[in-house]
Amino acid sequence: MRSHTEQAALPESEGSLRATLYIIATPIGNLEDMTYRAVRILGEVDLIAAEDTRHSLKLLSHFGISKSMTSYFDHNQQFKGERILHALRQGKSVALISDAGTPCVSDPGYQLVRDAVAEGINVVPIPGACAAVTALAASGMPSDTFTFAGFPPSRQGKRRTFLAGIRSLPGTLILYEAPHRLLDTLTDIRDVLGERQLIVARELTKMYEEYIRGSASEVIAAISHGPIRGEIVLLIAPGEPTQQESEPLEDILERLLADGSLSVKDAAKKASEIAGISRSEAYSEALRVKIAKSSSSEREI
Ligand code: SAM
Image 1 (tube, rainbow, N blue to C red):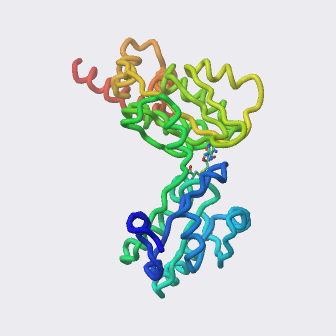
Image 2 (cartoon, rainbow, N blue to C red):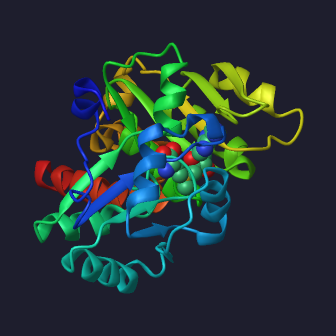
Image 3 (cartoon, protein in one colour):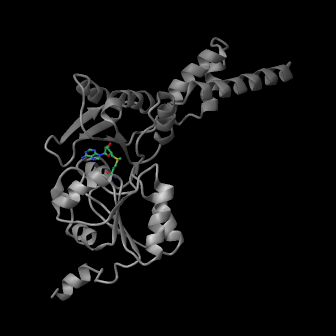
């Protein structure tokens, strides 16, 4: 018999698991971070949808859970999502798990949840590990306001544009990054956001958990000695917006083109570095500014 208090803490009694989609967080490296509730519900649902069934089978067997499984990942989510919704419409309960951490956070799940909600299907999150929040908790950076922006684009031009887009956001910025791109991304962060305080939080909850803290240049120097391995969360402290950072692109270009000493191409190159945007974007704006400048000086004559 459960006590009254336990029943209050465990709202899903037998039978109420029907027609519910559970979004279940799993550990990000340390199996002790699995929650009691996650184990219980995974053992009770009719079907488990996993990003990688073979990977999740190891986790489930560790906790003695044996269940029907189906895969649900980026490239089959439309077709599999429909099958999962079909099971839910028939009154079945389904648990969604990803390889690690919280589904829907840089992991598949959002579309399934969106569609389930649209159909009025009960969706219940089972909270647990999430690398972004875990890193923030140990960061010592402001946590009242923060932005999680996922993985930056892998190509430099798009990455710089992406960084320029989040540069002026208030609070701590949190990114995920692959180890082989870390140095390039840190270099772009220094160029586009300036010398902010950074943390590379590596292998959280695992044996080689590590935090590399310092200014952008210090962190770049620290990781330049050898290859960085493992899983990484990157935290960026809020910056004081400098006058240059908050200057609109048009004003930057007008300033650079004012005395006629720079060509449109050179002004665009400089402006792209200042504003942290692609050269092609800066070039089309520079052309527009130059044409506007020439026609206004013609009118003055
Ligand atoms: N859904 C997961 C979550 O809730 O954090 C994230 C999944 S995403 C595909 C995987 C990325 O999360 C990794 O590339 C890394 O950036 C970050 N990550 C996951 N586990 C981590 C860990 N133990 N330490 C540091 N970063 C981790």
